[in-house]
Length: 321
Ligand SMILES: Nc1ncnc2c1ncn2[C@@H]1O[C@H](COP(=O)(O)OP(=O)(O)O)[C@@H](O)[C@H]1O
Ligand SMILES: [Mg+2]
Image: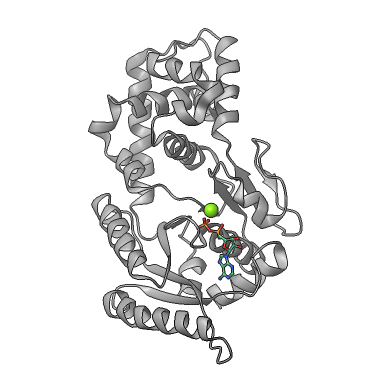
């Protein structure tokens, strides 16, 4: 199925972009979200958890305020860029003002707030991102499509496997996040039992339901698709193989691969021709391996960086039309 038919599918709600750093995930996810908002006339939310704020750069608009904000110039498009450090501060503050019991592992991390980069166990950003996705799945029915930039790594996707999750550090962090986040408020409102006292068991039950629900949504090929972004190099092929086997393991459907930054034909530049030759050779290999099972989309290297709405629209057209 072409990328166009994929994104046009009414049932498709989650579009995740993944691949190595620098290959063009942010550009492609931003361009796709602009295209969908403008051409499908849908309400689209794009989420990023990259601390480098690349989504803000891509849209040339500050999206790091910790709230979902409308993207200027695109009707129906909203963005959210999560800053893990700010998120921690926010939760720390809420926590101090409430009598919620903090899991001790999370408390330990809060103490490391000033030196978050070095204190945070690997995977924490992704875990926060993941719990944010869980939150959005549960609480934002108003968005028709949710695009996820810096998609979960294989490691994080494994969080969808319940039994290993619940007892782990990450399980506790997620429970804590859910507790402090919107889900709890909405759930309480739903139950209409403000005096209701939850205990640890209820929390675990709710977490289990939330994850089971997310698991259902994210493993349903009608609702979810993971788009791999890669460049035409051997290393990238190996990387893609790893990513695909992780996706396969957790049953996240994937049907499209974008091969980005391809050198155009250029007879005047021997450096460019030589790179192009290398890329075209690898492209044959890539077709050989993936063409049968995936839609392959070739995207040329632009003469400039891809920044701002005009460039994103240009890329969106190439990607989807
Ligand atoms: N096809 C392309 N042509 C030119 N520049 C590109 C292309 N794709 C991405 N870029 C640029 O490469 C850099 C990295 O892209 P980005 O989308 O941020 O990658 P990622 O999110 O995978 O790290 C950005 O500066 C972006 O503008
Ligand atoms: Mg990025």
